[in-house]
Image 1 (cartoon, one colour):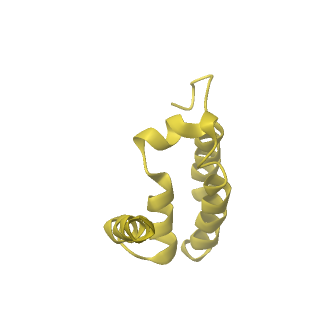
Image 2 (cartoon, one colour):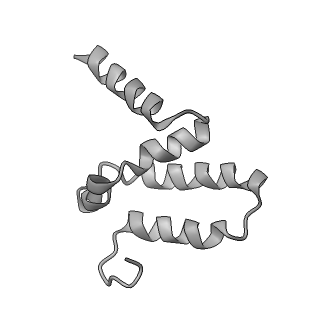
Length: 86
């Protein structure tokens, strides 16, 4: 995937994080995950970045790591929030 010539910004950010994460200690990983989450969250509604979000719910996964919850809890909370709006 890293050798693809048409990576999206989200994919590039994920690869930057992965490369850097091997040199980060366990206690420093959470702030780095938060940085990645804030970077990627800004791109969630960008129409050119939809391919990245179509295959993997990276935002929910990152939120689960940052909030120390399971991914199913995060997705369920999002579902309930949407359900209350309608």
